[in-house]
Length: 364
Image 1 (cartoon, one colour):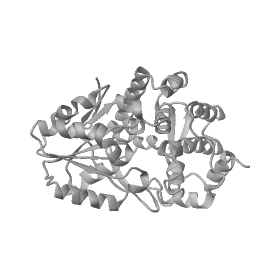
Image 2 (tube, rainbow, N blue to C red):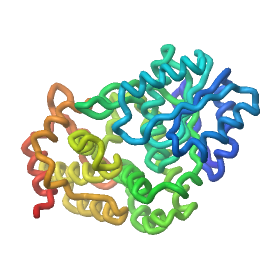
Image 3 (cartoon, one colour):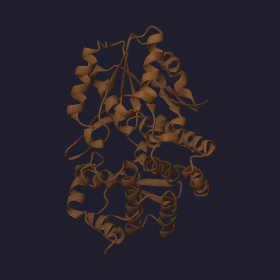
Image 4 (cartoon, helix red, strand yellow):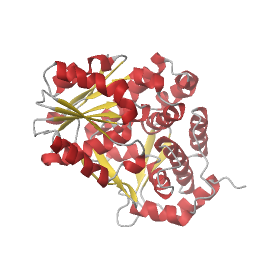
């Protein structure tokens, strides 16, 4: 087991990474939070494989434990589902000394974290991410939230978990598309922070796609280290933490205008990272060879890079204008100066965005 620490003073917590950790999950969870009662929020199809053993382990240790389930899919990450979770927690008699464990991908993690942040004005929670994307990104940093019809994560709160438990064995049964989706965020870390890591990914990608355990564990740990370092400097995204949004301005808008049904999150972010690189070219920040390297890495990850021709530019621009990263109606983008170094551009002209998307769009 490898431990990566997120250093936030009194809100610090460990990220535990290793194979077979779910067999010891009850002990790890109760060591992080000696709770009086526990609710586990997960998807129905994960319950038998992962949630039930955890629930059994907790009950064997004398801690009342309850299972809450929500349907899979981003379209269920909304306030109606949050309200159902509140009712379930009340029914389970989870009090302020209780604990919520989120088990699954980014949707139960984001939504469950928001529930924990707001139920009884805040209870403790622990993240057990089972997808690569959640393991390297969504479970770390305390960003919680839900979507509105007009945009992604427009309602949320910063609420740090008490621990993150990453069992790399859960990736053995992860659908291939979900694995590739997670690789988008892994590639992002190399672009924004660590050129050597980016170059390592290019050579390691075949082994990652084959799910070689050592290769996956290595990139998960390094991704967690990078995100922990950034979050430790800027917990509530007042400065440097914004670099983690590379590719997300277009990516989130693309998810919204396609009703969260066409793309996995990482697929939309992959397209958005190419958009950001081309926008950077348009405004004279990103060299073309950096754009080419990003496309090469995403192609190696078997992720999409072209902007869909059937998505109109105007609805996308409107969605970006509603994004929480937009300030005063001005579009903000994280743009790459070179591999391993990015900057925040506060006022990118809409004409540059439209020109970049036109270049990125595949025409029949």
